[in-house]
Length: 230
View 1 (tube, helix red, strand yellow):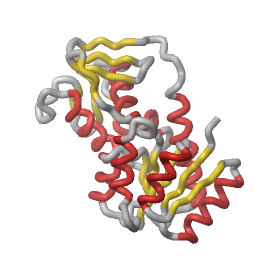
View 2 (tube, rainbow, N blue to C red):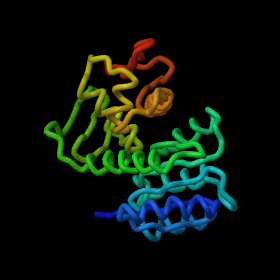
View 3 (spheres, helix red, strand yellow):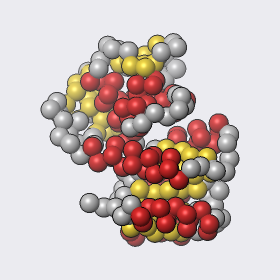
View 4 (cartoon, rainbow, N blue to C red):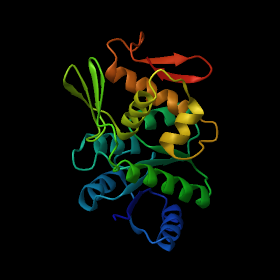
């Protein structure tokens, strides 16, 4: 099992603290102190997870995340973004670029470890063979075995989280799934009420699968509750 974790952060004290605690848990830890070095290391070592700071020299974290998600070899690597900023727009940018989680500094090492474990568990569970292999929704087809979705037989480029959301909604077609339920099932732990995370991913998913994301045909919003697949 790949237990390599890459930390990309320009604050050496934070890197050393995280590295020390991860190594105690048996992880093989690598570190980079600027975005360009981090991107190169991600391609070279192909880690099982990346802890990525938003504010980095040379190449900032958003650009690094974007380039990772565009690279065929490493685009499925889980990414947890770290930042000293505590602004809603920064969280949304990170999530829309494909980050799997987001932590604002300062954070407790215990919570970071729990999130690393949850994200890693979520990705490893995606390897299990589903009993249903294809979900056919007319123009939209979802291949559960190969983690692919197609619209009018053309492949849709989805992140793992977007696919997991679509799959969960499709397997519960017609049933309203609350934001908190989706957070728990997709992200693997309670997100402390940050249901905005679900809304961001749903919005991004709609842009990819709907003809008109302002008038969605597939994913219906149930005001004050959550979402369902029509």
